[in-house]
Image 1 (spheres, rainbow, N blue to C red):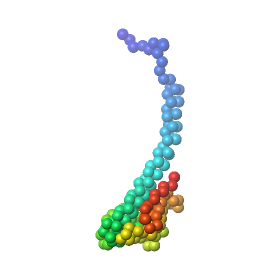
Image 2: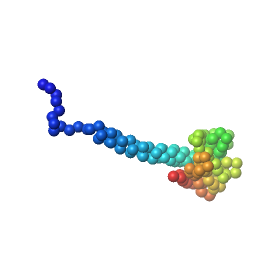
Image 3: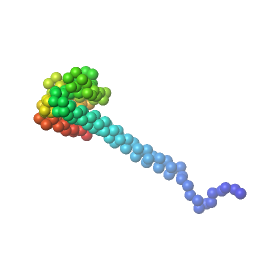
Image 4: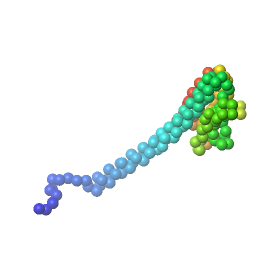
Length: 149
């Protein structure tokens, strides 16, 4: 028996195959930048969310132990540290391509034994563009995360 194609059987021609692959390539090239932007935004959201959670941690520690608790930003080392007295509760690195700045004197946020704090803002910057911020509300100390598109 021979395996011959019948004249009514159809397949893909070279032109159809080339056109289909070209369209798939075009769609992928359009989708990749959107995924990269989505990944960058997610990275910023996760970092700023972690910073906000560490601010809440410092506030809880101050209230529970009735001692001052501090979040100290170290711009040179690209880290921030949550401390109670000499004890370090948490240390976090800032992602390498970002810079974190604040309007707190000495980049130091101090939570009083009551949990109250001076209001202020942490800004996450890429190059010279703001990528997001954490706003610490006056007195209550509640952090609010805002991520720029």
